[in-house]
Image 1 (spheres, helix red, strand yellow):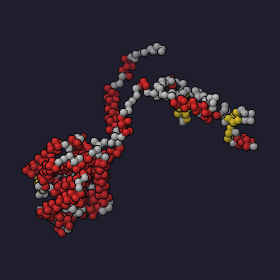
Image 2 (image 1 turned 120 degrees about the horizontal axis):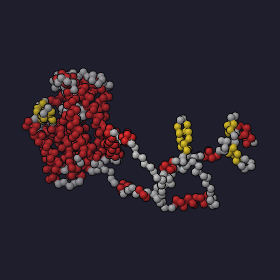
Image 3 (image 1 turned 90 degrees about the horizontal axis):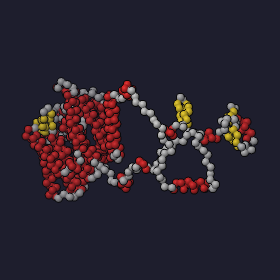
Image 4 (image 1 turned 90 degrees about the vertical axis):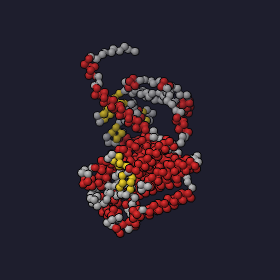
Length: 547
C-alpha cells in the first residue's frame, strides 16, 4: 500500500470545519426526533394489524367525539356563560380542564395491566375509595334538583357515581370470569364478592338518589353475565327482577312518577313538568334535515334549560339537523364496533368481558340520554357521553376508553409454528454471511458465451452442477471505489448524465454504420444502410428481398 501524506489543517481551517454549538444542538435534536419516530413506528408496526387497527380507530373516534363536544358546548353555552359568568368561554375552558384530567386517568388505566386491576387487592382498594366518596356525598355532598350527588372540591364539583362505573366494571369482569368462565370461584365467595364490590356501591348510588346511573350499571352487569355464559333462564329472571324493582322505585317517588307521565304526554303541562321536553321538540323541528347552522340556535337563548348539558343533543339537532344527529349516532356505533373488535381479539375471557362491559356502559348512557330527549324514555338527567358538559362524565368516559385500550395493549395472538421458527432466527456473523457483495462490471467486460462440446444439454448439466454446490462465503471482487472507477459517464438526455452499463442486445446486433446486420447469400453479415424514404434499408430493398 502506498504511503499517504496527512496534512493537518491550520487553525483557521480547523475552526471553519469544526461544527458550531448551534449545529451540534440541531443534530442532537434531529437524532432524538428520528429515534422517537423510530420508536413510534416500532410500537405501531410491531403489533398485528387486526389488534392495532381497532385500537387506533377507537382512539381516533374518541378524539373526534371529544373535539366535537367542545365545539357544541361552546355553541350551546356561550350565551348563558356570557350573561351569567361574564365570559363566553367559561364552560369550554372548564370542560377542557376536565378533559386533560380525564386523559391522564385514561392513560393510567391503559398502562396498568388489567389482570392486575382485576385482582382482589386492587378491587378492594378501588372499591373502598369509591364507597368512601359515596358515603362522603351522603354526609357532606351538595344538592341540586332534589338529589345529593355531587362532591365539591375547590372550584369543581365531582360526581362519585360516575367513577363507580369503572370500579363496578372491573369487579363484574373479575367475578364473571372466575365463576362462569374458569369456574374456580365457590358460591360463598361469589356472594361475598358480589355484595361488597357490586351491591354496596349500587345501594349507595340508589340512595342519592341516582336512578340513571343505577340503570346503566345494572345493564352492564346483565350484558357481562350474558356474554360470560350465564344460563338464559337466570338471565331472564335477573332482567325481570331488575325491571320490577326499577318500576317500583320509579312509581314510589313523586318526581319519578311525574317524569313517566310527562313522557307520554308532555303537552299536558307544557309550562311546568313538560317545559324542557317540549322545548327540545321545538329545537328538533327548527333544525329539520340540514339544521339552521352551527352557532345559530335560538333555543340556547335561555329557552331550553340545560342546553349545554342534558339537552345538548337537541341543540345538535337544531343547528346541524337530522344529518348532525345521525352523524353523532354513527360515531358512537363506530366506537362500539371497534370496542367489540378489541374484545374479540382479547387474550382471555377477563379482557373480553372488560371491553364488552366498558362499551355497554357508554352505549347505555347514550341511549338513556337520547331516548329521554326524544321522549321515548323518562328523563334521567344523564349527560351525553363525550359531548355534554360535565367534568365527572367526561373523565369517567375517558377512563372507560382507557380500559378498552388496556385490553387491546395486552392482547396477543396465539403462537403458531411460523412464529416459533421466526423467534429462533438470528443474524449470521458478519465474516460468514454466505452472500457476496454486488460486483459492477466495467464497460466492455461482456463477452459472448460459447456452448460446450455437448451442446445445450451439456450446458444445462453444468448449470445444475453449479447450483448443487454448497454455498460458501465469498469475497467481493472489488471495493466500491475500485468497481466504480472504470465506469464511463455518458449523456442521458435532458441535461442529465447516466452511467454506461455496456452494450445491450440492439447494439451488439448493429454494424458500424448503425444498420441491422442481415445474412446475405454469401453467408456473411452486412449492415443495411438507413434510408429516408423507407426507413432501414428503404422500401426498394424490402421489395427486392421479397422477390
